[in-house]
Length: 342
Image 1 (cartoon, rainbow, N blue to C red):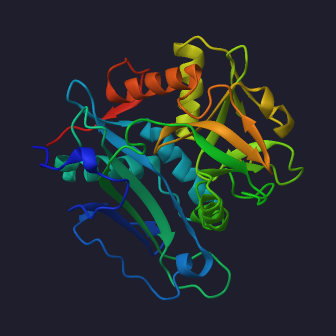
Image 2: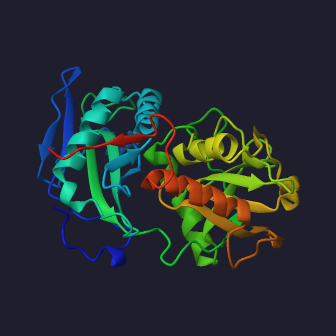
C-alpha cells in the first residue's frame, strides 16, 4: 500500500527511506548484495573517495504508470553507463547484473514510497560507487562500496516548465580526452563554482563550450542540450566530451521514430545558435527544460518561443516522452522495466 504522503508538496531533495542496497568490494571481489537500514557510511579517513575523488554515480526514476504498474525508464542504459564510468576511474566494475539486482531490490523494499500515478511525483533512485579503502599515494583504492538509495521527489518544476535563461560559461566543463563522457563525481565538483556564480547572476544554468577551440556547444552543467531548426529538425551537439544522456538519446529516438521528425547529431557552433528557433536542456530530473534566452557575454540570444512557454517542438517532445514514461503512450520494446511487489 502506498504511504499517505502529501505528494503534491514534495520538493526535490533527500529523504531517508527504510532501505538501501549495499555491496562491498574486498579482497579482490564483490560480496553479496544486501539491504541495509543504516543511512550512514563508515570509511577510513584516508579513503580513496576522500583523497582522490574516486567515485561515480547515476540517476533514474521509478514511476507508477496509468495502469498501476511500477516501472523504471531504460535502466539498462544507466547500468551500462555506470559500468563504463567504473572502468574509466579504475573502479572494479559494477556489472549490469549487479545494478539491476540492486534496483529491483531497493524499489521493492521501499515500494510504499513510489508515488501514485497523476501525483506529479516520482521515486528518484541514486546508485553510486566509491573508493572506501585507505590510500595515500596516488593510486586506486583496494576496497569499494556500491550503494543504491531512493527517495520520493516532487516535480522539478511545480506548475509546469517555464523557459529559463542560461549563460555561456567562461569555464571549461571537461578537458579533451578527459572524463566528460562519464558520470564521475569529480566532474560535478568542478562545476559547482561556475554554477553558484551563474545562479547569483540570475541564470538557471551554464552552457559550456568545447575546451579546445571554445567555438562549439557541448553541454550544460547537468544536462545535454538540444536545438530545433526553422524546418523542425531536432539537433544535438556531438563531442567526445559530452555525457551520453539517457534522456537525450531517448528524445532523439522519439523525435525520429515516433514523431517522424528529422534529427541530427553533429558539431554545433556558437555562431549558428541564433539561427535555431528552440532550445532545451534535457536530463533525468526535469526531462526537458525549455530555454528562452542564452546570454553570450552580454549579447542575448532570444528564441522565438520567448520566456512564457516552451516552443511547440520542445513541448511535443516533452509530452511524448513523459507519456511513454507514465504508460499513457506505448513504449518502444524494452524501454520500461517493471518492478513487481512481492
